Length: 248
Ligand code: NAP
Image (tube, rainbow, N blue to C red; front, side):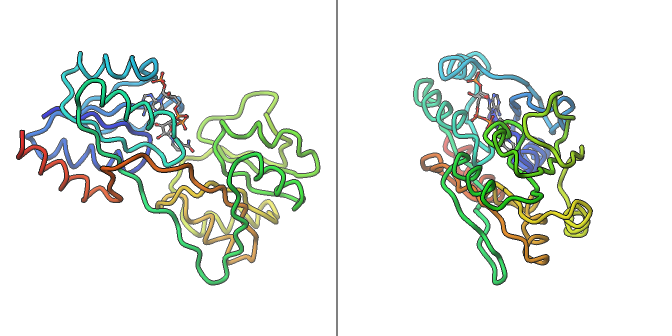
């Protein structure tokens, strides 16, 4: 069975490792190519866009893909929609692996907003120094906020000139521990955090650190999840794939 994992998340990496280790499955992970030196997953790797829905459908046929696991980030809505349409066109089953969202804990001060433009408006109203943890492709929405000094952390350095008014920039690759995030927020005297409701362990420490320091979080809500079939964990994805393997 040839499994194509649409990746870019830690769950995708774990799934590739577990499938490649099982022996009976050929696994290919696809990455968009956003980071210069991605962590190589187990199994085969391809990098770059497919060229929309038609390109992905063509790839599925040419590479003799038996099943697609869409393990992309909960905010990567376009590739997930493309996967739905391409799998339907090519007659290939598709499973979405979507990690559960974080749940607010006592002491959290979340200002939940529906989209990036609203997040930018909330951020402007809060002012001060803020950790802007929304991903480098979303920074432009905050470009007009000249009253805020943003602290931005990216895997690869930001382009010059940076897309937002920077108070500080750091290059580092997650996941980050609570101690790292407490130190980051203190080091830059951060008074608010702007984050996506990504869920997962890797990005959670900044949310826990904000809670510990009494710092508000402007939390951008998720887009609608991809349609069923959909699971929330790697182990559930493995069970689903085992069931499919037994059926074909
Ligand atoms: P997106 O807006 O949903 O997709 C934009 C285009 O990028 C897609 O149409 C596709 O190009 C290409 N693409 C996206 N994911 C791909 C993949 N895994 N393999 C091959 N092509 C892919 O995606 P995005 O939000 O920019 O995210 C890009 C990647 O970064 C995803 O793999 C995602 O898991 C990861 N990521 C995203 C976020 C986030 O906050 N959005 C956070 C962490 C990681 P074509 O139409 O040409 O096929």
